[in-house]
Image (tube, rainbow, N blue to C red; front, side, top):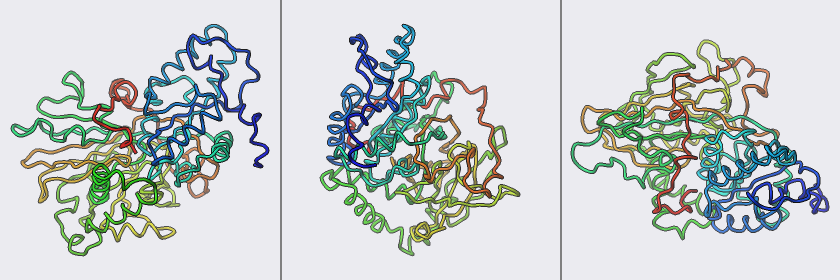
Length: 486
């Protein structure tokens, strides 16, 4: 679109009058309903200086009351307040407010952690006319934006760049995306620290729930139970260890991590230094996942649990919801044959199944650079359960949507359980031609044979279990700096 078309008339497509957003403000004489009213949430500390610059630009172009700094106010408070005001205006017969609510779209600018936080909030609040969400890539990996066509490079923050992005948001299509619930349970130690994992070491997506309380139905006496959720992936082993080293280094030396390029080069150096390319480490069996874990799967909704044999050389497993991992790679690839006699389908983002992929070492990961490269496809499943037991190593590493932690393994006959199950769906905004595909609109004719999943979840699961948890109970501990939220 030519620059001349990005004038004030163009911006009217997105502006929301103050009285619609701010309770008890004076009503205004408003013109036509905007074509694409937006709420903008920005992590002002993401992307070095980029987040702060982007905040200034959006506030200069739109009404300040529709642009929010996540460092100042959490999205659950903002959305609860705005939607309460919208409902009040609707009850008073305000047709303008009603149409704003029906057309509303959300923009979130930050890393994958920030984007996942906002998606979780929208999922939990169960908003009427749940607004679709566009993601601006301000982090290092930017898997969520890349999967839905918004790119993976940090954007420009000048007025022209922001207007171009707004124009893409106006043209974007809506897609559903699955979310996944994670439950982790481990025995309470008889001696030693009460917390097997220090609370501040856990990803914010597990902080979202914290430990399940003793009165919760998921709580089991004598065990610590944690819960969380994710949109993109859960991984364990080799890749999570490299990510953990990167995050540890960033906390110790934040001055080294000022932009996307330096972050990515540091990540590459850490991968080499961790030894995952060395033959001695790749030949060691102690870190083979089948040495300390058993994998159970339920392939379909309402199916039965069965054990899946983990190939002996696998040192990293990724449970993948989106076709974008570690900066845009697609570990599952794109199998084109129909799901018949156990063959695999392409990775749809809304089919209620998650793809499980294994890697032997960092050299194996390099196959992703090839045009049709992929990891070792293990399964596609509706629910997954890892049972970790005593092995030759006393800990492994795990990661949810880019946020890693160091996970202790049992020292006796006990097990640590991690269970992943389908939660619900939320609306995303996607560019036309993005790499994420819907089971309801598969691109290639060869994809049509995929078994469509019954999206209804088990009716007996309580409302508490079904909650993603980011809205009601998301509380960043005071010790956590929001700049660490990617």
